[in-house]
Image (tube, rainbow, N blue to C red):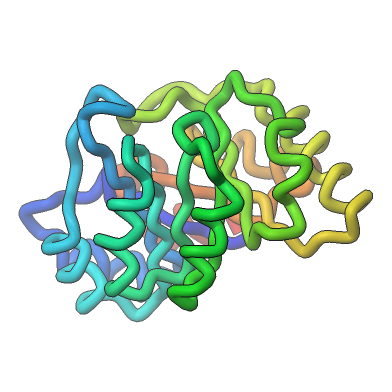
Length: 212
């Protein structure tokens, strides 16, 4: 299991130290939640702050766009060269075009599904994607309770991936902890995003190790 701590739960007054701490503790990716106050009722961070995160990290960035006007935000964050940029299928009218745009930047394209959105909505996109991010909470705020139905949803998505012989990874974000991570792994999940569980722990390494 790969672990991507979400900096949404970090202490922003000590952000550089927090980033270095999770990298030293063995995280695999640094998850960055970008919210615009329109697609979700919250505002987070822009490219100036993420640029500082990129300078502090030794691990790849995983940028999750929760925004309207996806193309604008892809162009805004692509120069920072994250490993992944994910966008919400619920907000995109031309997903094939945006996937190709992200890949043309040399970045791995990913699509995010809200808890109510079925995997069938991306059946004809899977071969073009490097990752699918399944939300196990409603997007917008950290610290929410895990929605158990994402486990069955992950298994259904994994079946679709195997049926198409695609190499698409599955990531789950929201309420992940040491109690539900095994069920997620058994359902075919490759990467878990954990915010409060990691940054709320007294020992980041122990928290990350327990998920792995």
